[in-house]
Length: 589
Image 1 (cartoon, rainbow, N blue to C red):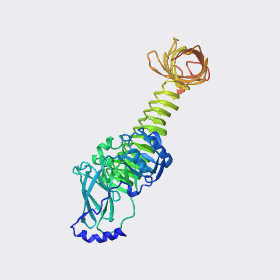
Image 2 (cartoon, rainbow, N blue to C red):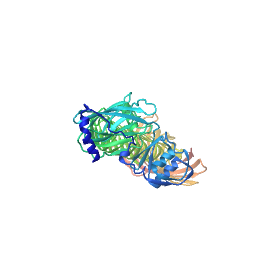
Image 3 (spheres, rainbow, N blue to C red):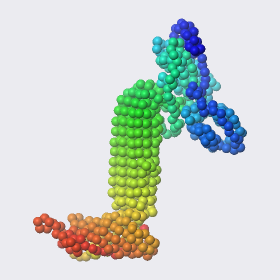
């Protein structure tokens, strides 16, 4: 009541100043004092610590008070040694004692934000009325110690979602709609302690009681992120990057926003600090994040997190985390974690994936335990990934559960199946299926043998401890064979593995050629059981019974266009099923 009476008393005087209204009072206070400091003002009691570290003190406070600390590791070293006496007082006083006056503290939910702010600023404001519903707050920001102007300081009203930067003279102008008779104008600059200025307008209006929701993004000071990326450098202005550093991870909430480009938005200059429930970007837009739905023509840029659904014809780029569904014509790029689905005609990229990536060209992640990657081209993971399915190749630097590729697979360790048309590479993979399997601790052996048809065979086996592939070259020792040469491919499995005895089972197929290397239409398929007697660590003997199917060695079609068969027994003029065998020696490589 006292404040309303004061406004009513001074209002007639102020209207005679021809639209110039000076600031009624100026209060320097911490950036978020207006929201209360429940944790910072809480009473605590800490014992003496003869020798400890900043990190250990933070851990004790987290366990006792439930307080979480966020800070830039470049300006605060948690391994710094401290010698502390017992303390009883507020949390603010304790932090001030151990860190010193050059640090400032902001409270956001359970987080205490620590910032290095050795500098202080002074503010000088003037208020001018331009029309009935609008005023302009103008002024200068200076360094208290040097009295020099401060450029690129952020001036903003968080309730009206208005913002601007000071110029090289420290001067700014902020247009404000006169919805309330009292507002808090906030001033923020990196390395300076934040300031709030309370401004009373000479209008007969009630002070609004509704406070705009706000939040905090803990990774805003990281060296990597949206502003350091290609998209950030191309589509975001330097002024937006400066404001991001000044506001220190603060973001506000709004129901919706519409933009033509990042510079033409319904939220104006403060757009990059707003999280929207619905966001529409005709060509492209830049916001703090989305909690709902975002649709874009060419690109959607989110500085922090996206929760919900995001669709764009070109690129989705998110600096924080994604929870939900991303659909893009060209690319989805997330600098944080993804919990959900990324779908694109081009490339998906994320830090950690808990869900599914479907990419027309490829998928890239750092970690993907419990994740599935599906790509027309390639899948890549620096860490663990569950399932990878690609048209060309898969690669995991650590462990993969299953890998299936049209050409090649590569991983450090594969727990399940590795299936590729050409090659599988791994340190450990028990179930690789491919023409060539280069498994570090798996099967690698070379054998020579002769079978019932007098084919002399040289065979190379490569694979895991259970499954392996067989590649072979065969030449007949008989003079009456039409098929002079044969090339063999197959798959085998180790059934028993002992120090002196091994038992294998293999399925293979031979493609046969004449002495001029002309491919014949007939072929030879075999199922064989290979008992193996180990003479030493590297050398063994084997005799392998087999069950075979062979098509006739000349034209397989006879009278009336029908093939001639013999149910059992080798017959070079008929398609036959028969038993056979081979004997040889095997060298483990």
